[in-house]
Length: 255
Length: 252
Ligand SMILES: Nc1ncnc2c1ncn2[C@@H]1O[C@H](COP(=O)(O)OP(=O)(O)OP(=O)(O)O)[C@@H](O)[C@H]1O
Ligand SMILES: [Mg+2]
Image (cartoon, rainbow over all chains, first blue to last red; front, side, top):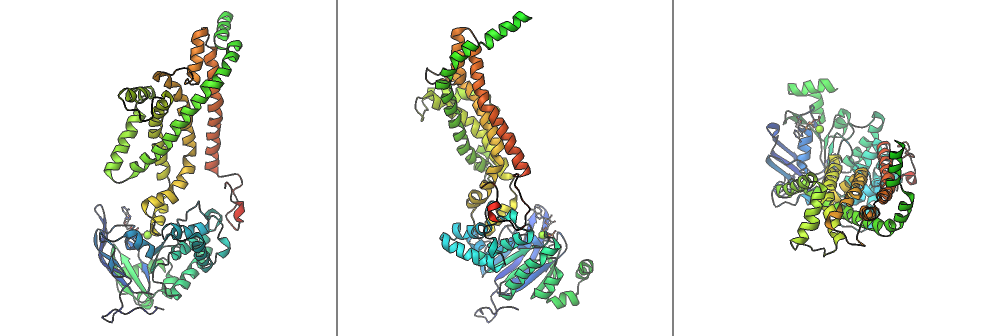
């Protein structure tokens, strides 16, 4: 499933995202303690773990919605926590989709998808709208361009949110439990869109409780507990041959 | 008892005095009251937004001055601020707005309005789900772009009722500007009514002014109530969330 990637001089693949000793504290609460993770271009990594284990926090450190208190986050080899890094620029290359969609309710679907193209990337309206309509078509919502979020179902809203992130042409997409707030019958449409993205070679980090999706789409599954990566492997390894008791415990509960 | 009632009627509701006062109120008092109030509200909206943004900043040198300003101008009696800003500053030679008393009055009322409106805007901005800011930042908007393009447009709708309430308060408080000293032609509704009452020894002129105030404030009060219910319950024609033509979107 992994798309081919540009080999670095050493012959190894340069990671698209690299977390090195990533730590995050909220006050005295240690939420991440030294997470190391490398994600190569085209790779789909699914993140599992119990509630409160730090999955969202880790994801949010990758686009600096949370500021790490220790360690390094690299995107394409650039340390994004460095002072001189322009974080707004990094964020245009890292797409994020949220559990609660967070669409802009005062804009149409097309407006949601094009606002950053126009205001951040300074595109002309025509060009932004052309790209916006393409992205909406990709998520199956070509006919909803003029609808407001309030007129869309949850599944449709989440697909607009995916289109909004895709419009920026990101190098990696972060998904944080994007189907958890959806009625069961609406989950499939969203997962189908994500499957399509994965098949198209998008680099993705997916925090999810959808074990079926992780099993089928992930190149690699990582299991987090108490702010640390406890185990990682292929879906077969994680779901079929879990080594750590904590992972087995977790899988017993969710499967 | 009947005599007393008759006195009250004659002193406060003398129809002849009232009808004689209405034209002057309309010609001089009403425009001045509206001008000063409108000026104060405009000042309050512009600077209130600025102070609100400063107040929610995480930088102390923006936040602290905003808080201090709000505390002071909400804490002082209006008449005191009007005397200090409208009379004191010009007396000290600080009058970038010139010597026009009505402008001094609008500035003084605007200074008060700024404090209240800043609090209204702050509450409105903070009532917007923080996911909106996060989503905006995650597509690369700067903090100020996110505020301007995403947060404030949503907040503005929510602050409309309290903002209208503030407008009512300013219109009423504008009756206090007589303390600055208003010459003929500059007088507001209250001052016109009061002058005529003093000359005629009959309060019906003030009652006439009162009717003008009520004619403005009562409709605004009902507007607030209507906006409030509309915002709370959503517009009447709100439709189920599925498969609507975009044109059915109400309110735009
Ligand atoms: N802004 C914050 N301030 C303080 N504590 C926080 C903050 N954000 C998260 N936490 C704490 O950090 C821990 C990890 O939270 P996080 O949201 O990353 O967990 P999660 O694995 O995503 O959980 P869930 O599956 O419930 O979404 C939790 O204990 C949470 O209460
Ligand atoms: Mg989470």
